[in-house]
Length: 224
Image (cartoon, rainbow, N blue to C red; front, side, top):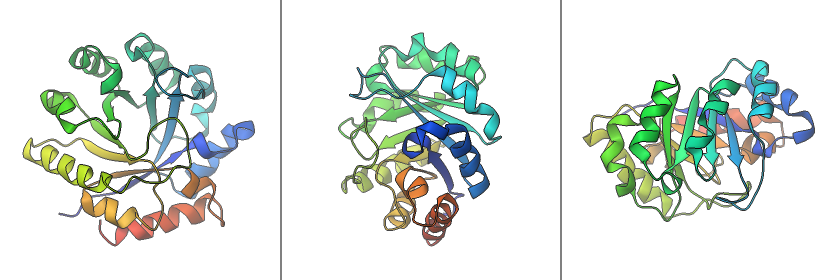
């Protein structure tokens, strides 16, 4: 089955001294979404940015802002990210004590609700909330830092997640994040992904973000 594939440019790999310009550049380069990784130094061993930064760069692109909360107690922080301009907010199943309630609240706030799973978390963690999910984000590296290598066994997990979503009649996006580059994009899309998160492959591409996105899109189109 042919599916549209989107490229979400992760600003975690951008120049933090010029984030506004990086977001604008990703938009001009053809990114479909802007991916923003929020890390709290507790759920993952790194710190990034919060609502003030997202609010500050919101005006640099009209594309959907895809906010990935890698934080403890995400339900306490959701309103501030909604107000900052998020279109999608993804929480971790591992961090939510009451996942169904959190997803319902996200939708009530007028944003798309996503759930992320770490590499070691089974797909069964989302079985009971599939009707409440607009996006499933599968981590294909252990979260916390950019530039890591794709975990090869993740391909089977992507395939099984696609089967689960299709069997449930779900229209949720299947997003994949971690170590994605033109050399593995086709296999990831063939496994069922509809959104590819790429940081280094976009902002670190030798020809710049436009060349990086073209390369990813060309690779993905071979299987899309």
